[in-house]
Length: 196
Image (cartoon, rainbow, N blue to C red):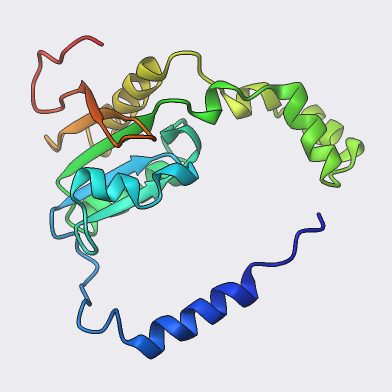
């Protein structure tokens, strides 16, 4: 990896940010104003777009970003963040927001392994991890259908033993990363969700 570090540029931007006082007076506390937690993808096209498209400003919501907007393990870090937002930070609504043209639809185990090796991960390390029982293909868990992936994540979150009795709605949406247009896949407040 020969790319120059972004750290000097980030620190320079921070000095400018602090000097202009742009953020002064905009402080909020840790409780989301709209009592909302959003799980979405880490895709760069969603930075700023998602918030603008949803009318979210600083202090409105907790936002959890994870590849593919997928919550795959009921006791993994993404679910941990959701549970903290609900039980400790007063979130009372959850939205899972996937997006069109998601890179998780294109993830291939062989391409991923080659990329790891190109980035300096030794083949022996990869083999050791596989021999220890980690199925890299399953770990990557690509999806073929975006809508099914959103529904699956909504179901896992909604049925979680630490959430299922709370009555907190879990919605599923899809955003267009070019226009910001939102589609409802699962309306967590309505049993008759539109089929997409």
